[in-house]
Length: 135
Image 1 (tube, rainbow, N blue to C red):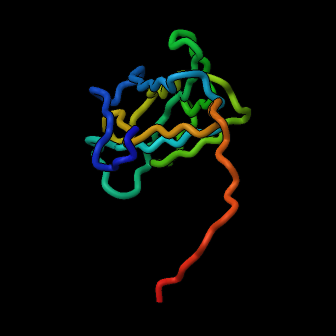
Image 2: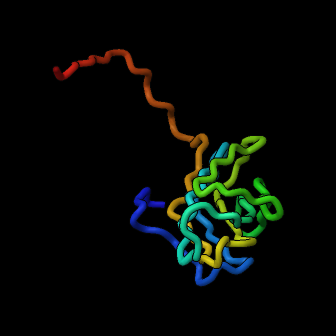
Image 3: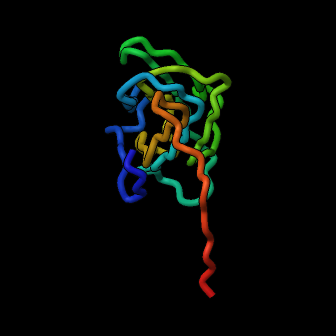
């Protein structure tokens, strides 16, 4: 979750049941996620006809999970999968659970980005701006 494409997280294998969870630190309103798969040790170069299948889950306590995105049966070739939730949901923990990693690779992610609203104050509106063009 460091926004650096030179680093990634990897499970030991590509087996079903492996997962990655993050703690947002406090309950937040979650509206969308972006999953950037890393394809570590995949045996395909170029276009693949295999796809990631996974479940994206959320939890308030890190123990009871509920699925908000289910691509367990109908995955798609989306190495940077962006999913807008059908309805905003409030949770502290986000987990992606592997069902199938494509092309013999390990279940691995560059980043799992969570989009939504926090509880902090909104920033003030911009009231003064200046544009300077460099000839």
